Length: 104
Image (tube, rainbow, N blue to C red; front, side, top):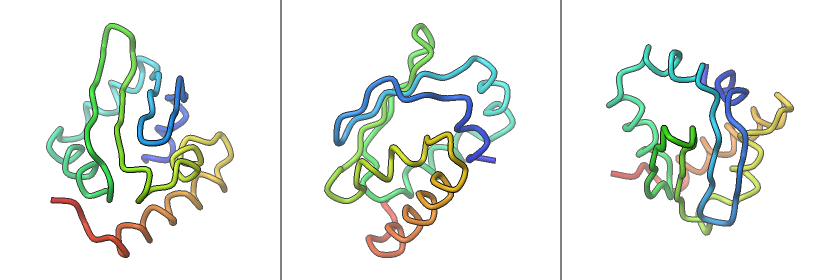
């Protein structure tokens, strides 16, 4: 499901440690199906995740992360239009979780 939702966001700006994503309004209907706490717990489980800020006025989300733990290239690949590239990034992120533990 998450890989399909990536098609509803685009990278607006990305510097190591900070990425701003623009989202289509349709994503809100998809996200409403999930428990907000489950989404937050999922984000918190990603190594190096620091924070996020949702801005409904600009239809964007700002995510801050530790670029020394999660390489910016992996973040870029997560939002790639190429399915294979995004899937590889998910695997890489999963390996980082195993290697670096889960944030709490």
